[in-house]
Image 1 (cartoon, protein in one colour):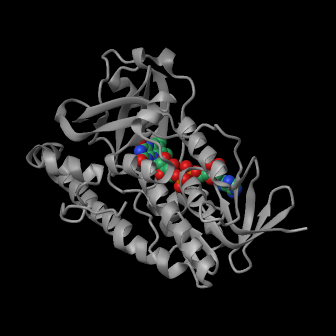
Image 2: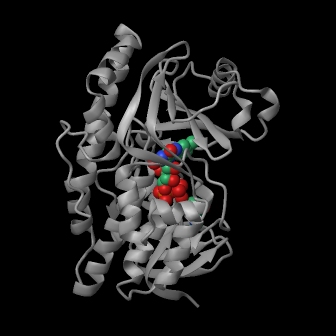
Image 3: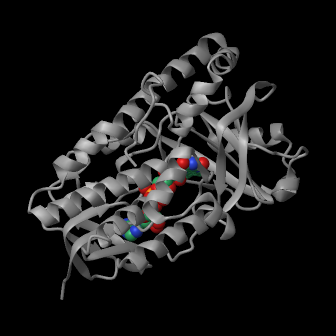
Length: 382
Ligand SMILES: Cc1cc2nc3c(=O)[nH]c(=O)nc-3n(C[C@H](O)[C@H](O)[C@H](O)COP(=O)(O)OP(=O)(O)OC[C@H]3O[C@@H](n4cnc5c(N)ncnc54)[C@H](O)[C@@H]3O)c2cc1C
């Protein structure tokens, strides 16, 4: 027998939990499906900006203090550095600290909030197909569940998105970055790392990072795929330049990162896409945590409103995306191409001059106090 809910949410990570708490708190029946069992490993730098911290408080009542007490915030720093593989290009402080988290634990905690809000959460259940017209979601074990609406919060490889006939998957793939990341003991690097560090200039459209994370470091690279780029080889060179102790390298993994592939119309029939499934990642620094939470919240709100008023959720969802999210992603996308082009023409010194000239406002832009659209003051409305 097909089980029926107001909404099925595929994916119980950030976007899924944000949508689930929003809907469940309004008394809607919600089923969250995730193919993984939580806490599960999630490849991510785990860096939270000011706007993310505010949104986590708004949606889940979690603050840096509560997250710290649970061991989810692993490191806090208001400093940063941008380096080439040979020299420091810019370094300084920002007006609000970066919070570096353990993603496995963060996701687990937010899913717990979804459950507490009243959502039905089923782990280890994989959706293999979705029918956006009927709201049916087909599970790997042969069962079928149905929602009046379906929210695809199932990440970069979204199964829900695959059922949208108008989405150009080839175009999305073109602007999906490859990433590789390792978690190593902090002592595996010859010098202590006391701030997030970005490494630029060795990838055509991408960068590397070293983020402190408690007694560990997260070391990774991401970049758009080019015919002549061999990522695994590049990563080895990068680790050699950083002088990472090879004995510390155990498990090296990769995951796709939407990097300029965001959709302008992530709605089809009774299904909506949020988070990585819609490509909502800021395309210069690859910030996706905030955008997953925010689009999940918007999708949840739009569906709750539609259920209460017998209307379609699409228009409200698109209005919010176009009002607050897409101007940021478009602005960041333009800036990224200007910076990558400048770097190609004039070398890394161009980035050094750019960052050092506008350090304060640029830091506020990364945090979300200012917009990627002409550095205007940003009002997120939460
Ligand atoms: C290497 C790397 C580093 C990053 N670093 C940062 C960072 O420091 N800061 C930042 O802000 N962003 C970062 N990001 C981006 C950020 O991790 C993502 O944007 C964010 O996780 C997106 O959240 P989501 O909820 O949309 O999807 P995800 O977190 O990818 O979750 C999708 C969920 O859906 C489930 N799922 C998938 N398919 C199915 C299915 N068929 N059926 C059921 N369940 C399914 C998965 O198990 C998963 O739990 C990074 C990304 C990568 C790859």
